[in-house]
Length: 110
Length: 119
Image 1 (cartoon, rainbow over the protein chains, first blue to last red):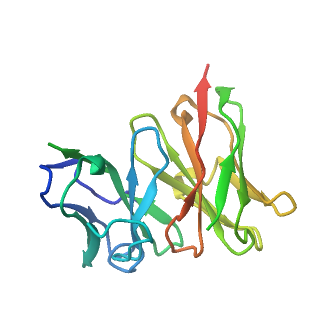
Image 2 (image 1 turned 90 degrees about the vertical axis):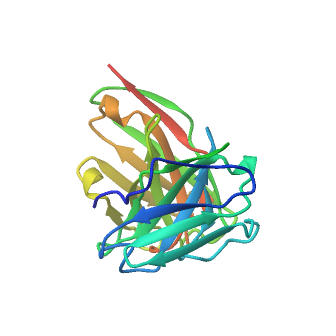
């Protein structure tokens, strides 16, 4: 199972919106609505920001939103803030009953 | 939601084995899924496998099928992840994480266990 494809880095100025893509296949992202997004700050454990493509856990800012079209899932961060600077990873459930992560995207707030 | 507490850092020799533990509290351990995820220095997260404590069923990423074993001890409310034939490339932070469905997200994470492999 190959890793999902994410851009290595995305940047934006405070207040702007950015979108991170996550490209999979018909065996994972394209087949199931079980895509999650995780935020990881340096030296910390990941934290779920979006699950089931577009659901947001309690306590996560509504500036974070998710969507999916075909084999590509996306995470949008609106009203970018300094605290959003972190690494972001997508995951998907797969047809062989496993999970697979994306390669990660470093978000920089300019 | 579940709280997960992992065992401490390990330093191992090339070719040896390491077993990392993950103790659960705060929620029903039996019917959740415990996943293991690793992250080598400067590298992305990598999903390794899962276990369901209910019946001990497991599944692994193809890459880890030969050298990784995930087990559980219901009496201790613990999950374990063992890696054999350690190589320098296995130097990484290893996390346990939990979710309510095998296809679901990881809503609880352990603090991570650093495993360092050297010759």
